[in-house]
Image 1 (cartoon, rainbow, N blue to C red):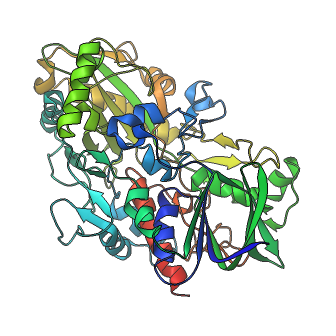
Image 2 (image 1 turned 90 degrees about the vertical axis):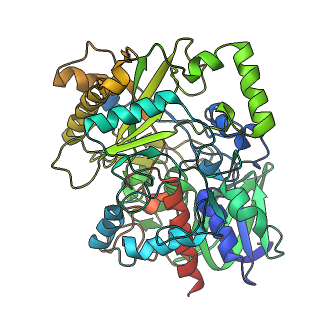
Length: 529
């Protein structure tokens, strides 16, 4: 091996950038490997540019799921960041921690040190909250959090309708209980996307002990006598290897991390054998436990109120939008895909909110396509804690081949009930006086879907990923878990996983900032060795 480092971090996404910063803060040498390119594409940094980054092979792996029975045989595009910053470079920029209950449940499942009271200081440590520090928020950290820089009357109307339905207005979703409606806080700085490259990696790149390589796709981990001693990767058409003195940390995400484990012979013996791989460490749970938030995009035509559709569907409107952003870093080009959030319960039996709405002043067939020409809004609703479980597994020994992604959406009967109920609740909110005055007309899924069976079928027709995959390298205290509560991979030494794949259960909200927290905690545990 030509090079040796103390730490090797595999994956330069949300977790990897955070880890690279923290692990290189001392004198130890760190190598960060990212299979994608640099974050030098202009649309990454302009907030509305997510429309041009998702589905773009320059910035997105452009994965797809297998055909899903629960989605009436459809396969979904499955966006994953293929660029430094990972999904923080192409996502919706929403700053969301989830609920205190999420982390307390992890602790109850045996993951000591992961309760809400344990992780809250970690969220605060990296945070730079626009309103300053208090008991729940931090100031002066790397992870900038601001308010949105534009306003829509249609969203105010939806929020008022939600209040009329019985959902309270609140100011902050990130204080442990997110039930209510509010405008999302976003990872932006003065109208520009604030990804983990700007926050964590760029300041650290000044350090001589940090090496960053892009276009470097890992082929396998190098294992000797039960210990990971380095990695083998492909870059610029050549095969390279790097040795590691201390630890290798996988931070390639819920799709990439289990894939790399399996490419290295760590996984289910039967899965590996079927793919033509030798089994080095038999860990049947690798790649299992996939969870994701399935969103149901309910859309309504309106009249008598402005939406983005009318502005963005004409050349003159687009020019005015561009001018507004150029002059003030505000307007539609500064907006996250969703501005208004609503958290509520599909049934009073739930202890906390189990539904999340992302409400948008626009409508389109799918991300990457033009908005409709008529005024409309979209109320996307997702089940925050799905019971359905899927998997991610390699197809072949070729590291460049996409793994098989099977989320198994709506395979649990409980998830079907919640899906149908969520469409009913959406209709009830839209029927309140605050919105009824604008004559909303449902066109997705459409008013003809009414019975339980019809609504379940409609959910399968309109459901799509909100790209929050987690859980495929499940953390636990039980011997069947992939990693222990210190994120060490069971059955092999010198290897940890630190990204969204370690979540035992999915958090009740957007998953990007919880991934920053996971990396923050991982770095502290590694450095404490």
